[in-house]
Amino acid sequence: MAAREHERGAAVVEFVLVMTLLIPLVLGIAQVALVLHVRNTLAAAASEGARAAAPLGATTSDGTNQTRRIIRDSLDDRYAADVTATWTTISGVPAAQVEVRARVPALGLFGPSVSVAVQGHAVREVPP
Image (cartoon, rainbow, N blue to C red; front, side, top):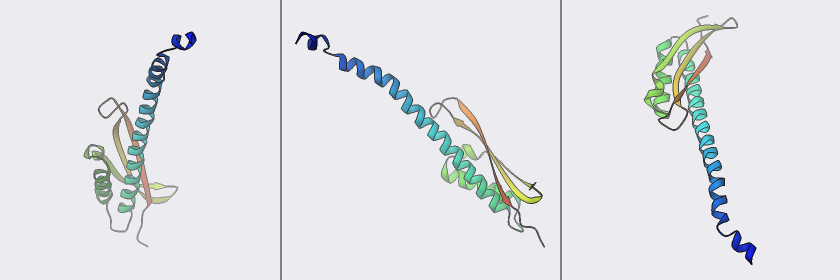
């Protein structure tokens, strides 16, 4: 019985020690998931924007506008600030390219941010 009384309250101390390690780990995983979600959403929007600029008669501004629309619908206006669309050639094939650059918070919603740059490409239709 004396050994049990000596360990009285040890569970609380162990719980606090485990939680001080577990909570930052879980929050870190959630933050990485947030950054990856934003990056993947931007990449999908850039690809859709490139597809919008690729058809015959479409312009690069069509791709830029489509990309911004998707980003605003999915995320926030601040992520749609730096969107550019250009014509390019990939392995000799004419293509539309849309690039999105954004800053994503790396520590919490208002902490320091990391720069993310993604590109989307689509084969451009050309007259025969």
